[in-house]
Structure formats: structure tokens, C-alpha cells
Amino acid sequence: MVEWLEFSLRAWDRGGDEIAPAEFLDQLLIAPDDSATVAEAPGCPRVRLLSVALKDFDHVDITDDAGARCEAFAAAVRQGLIRAAGWLARQPPGLFEELRTTGRVTDVFVGGWIDQDQFDLDLPAEFLRACGVLGLSVSICTND
Image 1 (tube, rainbow, N blue to C red):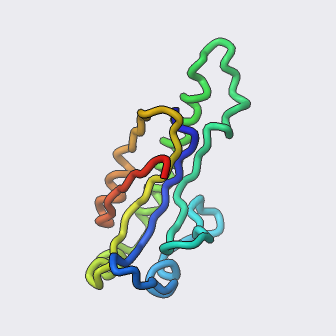
Image 2 (tube, rainbow, N blue to C red):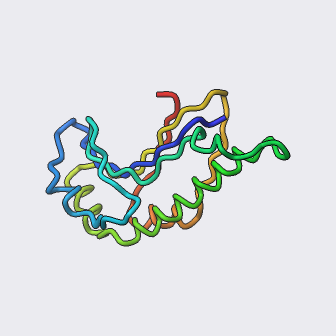
């Protein structure tokens, strides 16, 4: 079972060189009401596109349907990724091309925690299309 998932847009340098905010974060179009937010954490510059935790759905009644909580979690992931796709579609494609031209890596990183050895993750076509237009690969790592 998936405990939590977080999707982040990031730019990083394979050689470990730092990427200045002016090169990446400052060029992104982030409105105050966007669900995308700059992640204030160590490591490479990144924007949190979506963060969902199963515990956020503890209020969901599972009396009649034992899977209702997991279904609500999956629906929140899907809806969040469709919103993220809309946000990605508003970003300047040239920014990502320029970063890659200078040797930077741009991707969407999916981090998560699972308490079993398997999980299901459905990525909506809208999200994959938005990533593809910007040349973003999707990397997934759980229990890191």
C-alpha cells in the first residue's frame, strides 16, 4: 500500500554544479493560486507539483467499502496530476530546452513510501503529454 507520493519538477546538474534561481525557478510561471509551489528544501531546485498522503483520507468511511480510502487517495493523485498538467502546459518550453542545452537535467521526480513490495501508479495521459511537450522524463523512487 502507498503511504504517500510527492511529484516534483526539478532541474539538476550531473556534475553537481549549483543551478541559480535565475536559471530555473525565477523563470517559471507560478501564480499565487497555483497548486505548484517552490520546495524550500536542500538539494536541487524543485517545484512541488503534488503531495498526497494516505493519512489525509483517514476520514473516509470504509464501513461498506474497505477500499474506499485507497480509491479516494488514487482519485486525489489523478486530479492533482491533471492540475499539474495544466500548470506544466503554461510553462515556457524554451526554458527546459535551454537548461538541457547547457548540460542540465530536467525531470519530474516521484518520491513515495510504500509498506509492501508493490504499488499501482496510474499517470494520466494529460500529465504524460505535458511532460513530453517539455521534454521531461519521469523518475520514480520509493522508500529512499
